[in-house]
Image (cartoon, rainbow, N blue to C red):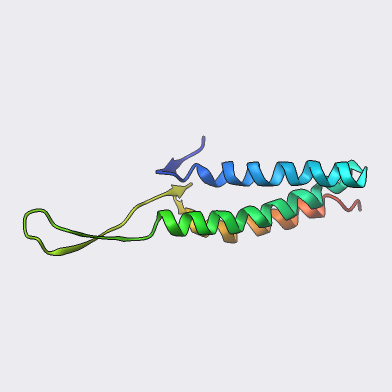
Length: 107
């Protein structure tokens, strides 16, 4: 079961949209399917940067005013994926990139 709040679902979508074509391009250019793991890892690194900037933008606090009192209030958004704010997934995706790139090298 996938759990997200707000636009948190963008984390796996951004990762897939960037990493899968990188893997396909790498495998096609090199002519060796097992090197697609390196391309997938590079794609996950690029996706980590995109997720960080998107999460930072979406979860940035907004300044507003309380309707009854007129006092300044800071409104916070909550865009999470598996209860983790989007921008923090940028530190998890590189770990997955290392794992994906490691599959390109047989033991």
